[in-house]
Image 1: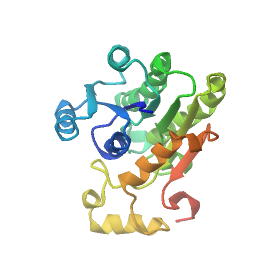
Image 2: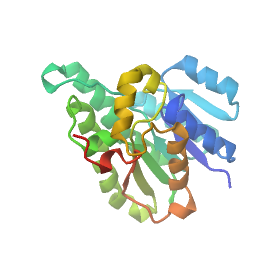
Image 3: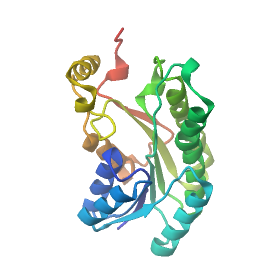
Image 4: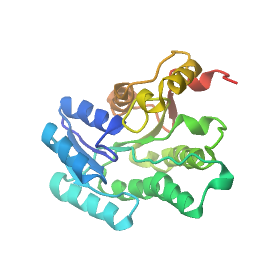
Amino acid sequence: MKRNILITGGSAGMGLSTAIKFSENGDQVIITGRNREKLEEVKQKYPNIYTIASDVSISEERKALMSEIQKKFGHIDILFSNVGVGIFKPLTEISEDEFDQLVNINYKGTFFLIQEALKIMPDNSRIIVNASWTHHRGLYSSALYGSTKAAISHLVKSLSIELADRGININAISPGYINTEQFNEEMLGEQVAQARKKEVPLQRFGKPEEISGIVYFLSSPEASYINGQDILIDGGLTAVHNY
């Protein structure tokens, strides 16, 4: 049966990889993003993927997004909340504007996106939220970013109870070092990239496909008893002591 999946932040990286995975398996994929040019590129290359320009950190745009999806497709079976931005600075250097930006996009946007999406999600739907490995450790310059991701992880735990009476499973994933447009070995440079790899027991960065495969599994009947979890996909990065 064809399912409708909404992927925010779906025009690149882990979001796009997940969109392709679901589309290739016959599902109706809807992706959102703020970059209209990237969305158009996806539309041209993958005509079966439906694109909507939307900033999910803005209330009116979230409402308009759900309205368009409901008119076009009726409902959402799976939500993959993948939007996120990062600012990595020591606490003493972070401005209130930067604080508001990260909280609005990473946490508030995710919180109210789920609230809006639930209005057009039937019982027994699935929600997956992209958190991060960073909130599983105390990290220098990650106080702001990591705490927004920790908030998401806690949200998932609480919603696993709130949504249980509707049979809706919700889980988070926490990727480690993944090669994407926003973060990759080439961008870091050889010396830094090699140092990062040494932190990972598998001695490499992950691939977007290794994330999309887990999202696909969490959306499957085989994952029906997985609920309220935050699943690390980090090659063992957080399992070992690196200091």
